[in-house]
Length: 182
Image 1 (cartoon, rainbow, N blue to C red):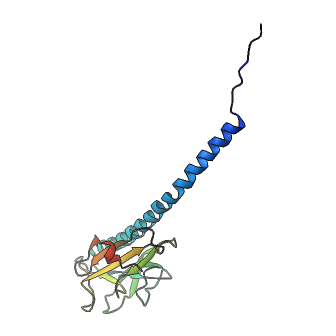
Image 2: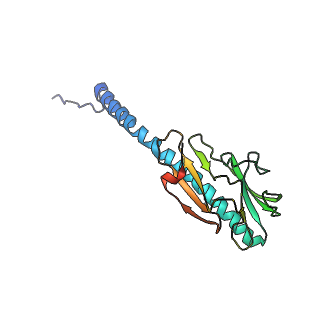
Image 3: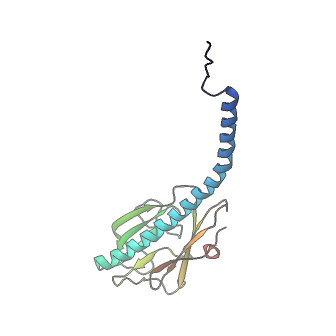
């Protein structure tokens, strides 16, 4: 008596069909992941800035002296302009009107590490200074509200904005229109 042996395994055609279906599925899924990644990068940039501002305010109260946050390209001095893209520093300062004098460097925060994030605004705000009572000390010429826009240069992802109510130092999330993305 002959016993018929059944071979187990996959044929080449079955394997090729499976690989083709997998490739099609991956091609469909990858573009949607790009949007999720870009959105997460924007949220990360917004949260980093929010955290630094809250830290500066808290340190001013804890140290009972003015503490400022300002844009910095080199991580040790405040920049002369309102370019917040390269990063920012939190410093204990002497409260000289119209400028920041770095007494003690408290924290260095790098700007967004990815090219998919740009930071707009701050208005003409060169720095934010918090007094020991937690209130913001800003020039009278500064707008009542400064807006930082966190934008995707490609415009593929909805922008975020972070409102800093400069007189009280409170922070809130703004609207897409307030982000003023290019």
